[in-house]
Image 1 (tube, rainbow, N blue to C red):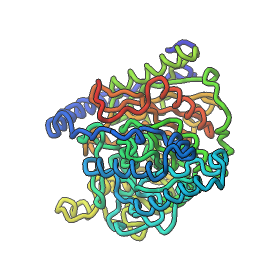
Image 2 (image 1 turned 120 degrees about the vertical axis):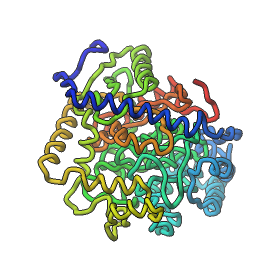
Image 3 (image 1 turned 90 degrees about the vertical axis):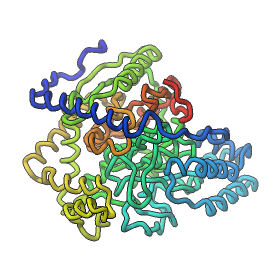
Image 4 (image 1 turned 60 degrees about the horizontal axis):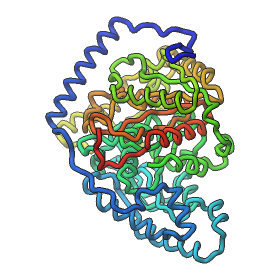
Length: 539
């Protein structure tokens, strides 16, 4: 097929005049707001300390190999990353708790095990593939002994009594938990800021956001202060921070990775299918072995060891959502990024890459909000009440105005908006669930077991702090994938855009075809360079 030929049988309907005019007004409004934020913050934030230690540049897979072969010790590696955290955290505020002392003892034990020759190098690679490698995760995924607040003030002293399932599996594989990273309040917003730990800052420009809710994790990875980490994603909470911070992040297929040990927990089995714990890392080669570990017994469903012939994969792309209501237009830099990916795939693999335009993507936000509804009787106000009570968001808003509330402004507003969204079981709810099901069926038919869709991860590069409040629906580019249940990988394109910030795309596949996303991510890393050091600012 030619690039411009539509694969879809239906031609998308044109936008109504009302929506079109509304989007034009919103576009002008956001341009004005951007100018205001530029005046407030200035051209650029503080400069990142340069990366001096070569250990920090290695992939987790490479570090594990060198530790096994005694070219490096686990203690050396751990010390390098602890030093980096101490260097960058005063500037970035990405790490909110640590277990450096305990991790150091565990690193010494790992080194002793290797020196004992109890296992061969090959045996260690098989039974403990990440032996001695430090790992970080966000403050909603339980790590025994560390804070488990999810950014909620009333949980500021709560500590996890046991590991989450995913972290327990990483420990079993030899990884050493050493740092906990920042999140948004109750992990339901796309800037990592809360009343417990404060605000995290982007290593490429400290005036910009790190994303959320795995924003601290995206930040610590981009700053080369952790080898790899775990995030979680219910509306883009892995992929948006990965994109904003220029790293790789993968949301697995639904029901593949256990969510046990997270707070807050999903209210229903349907919500549980939207939420996924997944790997976040600077290097694409770490994604597959991490996913294979945290998937546990369900890894067999993904056939991750099955090789992928990229020349036999079918490729599709969509440059924007078609004009979603109150959603920003896609930045020119990001459209050019998608087009460069398309051109590379055509030239390198000699394959067609077909343009598609799914009409339902315009309604991504509405579909996400509706499908997040359930009949449990719980809502976001209960999550803000630590699942023990429901806060009154209206009185909390009044308290916030008096600077007496312990909740964030956006947390309170989200609780209000949650109450105003369509109700579970209403005619609007059923209509939007049907829309979701139709879109899922169309994408399944298109992608099959050998297709991927290249799609923007987000319509803009990382906004200024607080700017998302005025662009709240932009998360829809990632959120739609959650309610569809598909796997998706955020892939950095190894370059800094015109605003001095990372560019990237997301790669989406059908159920349990995660290996296609990961294989394409590795190819794009080879082609475009993947993660770029934050101190290098080249337009």
